[in-house]
Length: 440
Image (cartoon, rainbow, N blue to C red; front, side, top):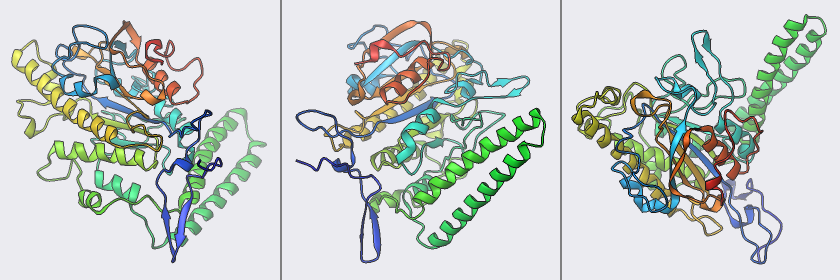
């Protein structure tokens, strides 16, 4: 029988002047009550975006249920038939055109003629709850670095003030952030972090005194400012907490894969399939080592890119999407979508191959939702929406589930948050509630 006292995830092995972070062990995981004293691993959430929709004529199955006939685009996923649900009928209220990326995880009409104003995204609600014990509350990945604010978005993630969180596109940079320790200068870094913390304390005290001398509207501005200061302070405290703790170790073969830069916008002779595999492997590694439990990933941006020389098609994805019922364009659209789904299947295979301390797989403990900001012909409905994984989190997969027309996409995000134990209020976006058929 294992010791009933839970071992902290922040436990280390120390000796001969070195410190080594432990992987997830059974003793670190909370237990469910019962005769077998079952170990329970943490949930993981992934939100994935395929810009400019998909060829829904080649995506949507013709029949429903667990034994549905796979469509051309979904054929590569059939090895994981029992671990996925295709959701027809999803709708993004402010989607369509090419601004669905702004509202994808927030449900807000963020992009207007008057400017851009958003609210917190579903992944950041999850990060606030699930990220308390991890080095990174969340990670933002994309095919292009930055935020993209004002154009096609490069990130799906928005903080509590409605500001976009920048994404990283280079797998070597992400790998360094996750797994390379900065031994030199660690003490100086700690001193700097603590100095910054004391400066923030001073700023808060000064602002509080100022509040007593200014007008109501100015106090509102100061309150907004202090909210920003609190966010910085919380991040500083997290940085201080983790600054002297070693990152997880990975084997030499894995390290060698990520040694050189692989920026999609800079790397010569860029090969997308190699890049895609590196990014999906990083997600699996980040979850396996419990470096984070929440990830968002812009797999394909709106408008730009989306196809690469090795795809062997005649136009960019956006150009192909304006197909005008041309058979060649429709066929090439489907061909590109199939390639993306093959890579998605490889990702699911990675997650399925990783065993958790409770004997389940990482796929069983992960909820992966993908969709787009538009459907076929740039509509806000008929979105290419799929939920994968999560069988150990209480998901009952249905194969192909035909939802009522114009079912809010936020129903899927709410379902994922619910199964991961993330509390949300009744007014979550435009959601009508969790998708009942998916609840085990």
